[in-house]
Image 1 (cartoon, rainbow, N blue to C red):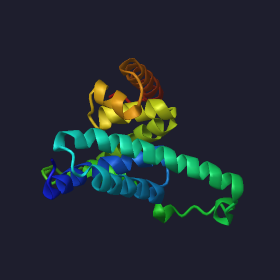
Image 2 (image 1 turned 90 degrees about the vertical axis):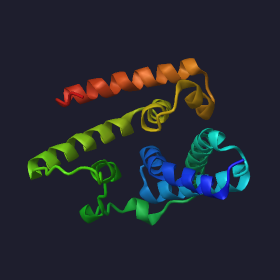
Image 3 (image 1 turned 45 degrees about the horizontal axis):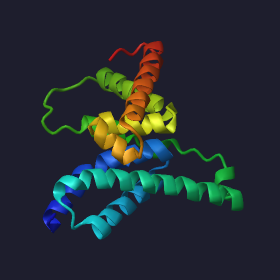
Length: 190
C-alpha cells in the first residue's frame, strides 16, 4: 500500500510529463491542466491505497480516460453552445509559452553557455518536433507519447490504452515513420 508520502512523490514525478501529454492531445493549456489535476485527484481518491508499483499504470489509464471525457464534453458543448470567444480571432503573441522548450532547457546541471543562435536553433527544432507530434493521429500520438515520453513498455502502454500489444507496436511504428519523414523533409536529422 502506498503511503501519503509515496503517493505525493509519484504525483510530483509525473505532473510535467502528464501535462505535456495532455497538451499534445487537447492543444489548450488550461484544459490540459484541468485534465491532469482531475486525473491526479481521481488517482488519490480511488486508488491511493494501491501499491506504489501499480500507480503508474493506473494513472496513465485515468489520464487517458479524462482526456477522452474532455473531448466528449467539448463535442457536446459545441453541439449545444457557440462561445463568442471561439468566434473572435484574438491571438496574443505575448501568451505563447512553450512548455517543451522551457523544460528541455531548465537543466540545473547544465553549465555550458549557449549562444543566442544555438538557443534559437534548438527552440526551432523543438517547436518543429512538437508541431509534428501534434499532427499525428490521436491513437498514434497517444502510443508514441506513452512509449517514448513516459518511457512505458509495450505491455504497460497496451494496458493503459486498452488495446493489444500488437496495436501499440503498429501505432508506434507508424508514428515514428510519419515523424521521421516530416522532420527529414524539414532538414532535421535526429
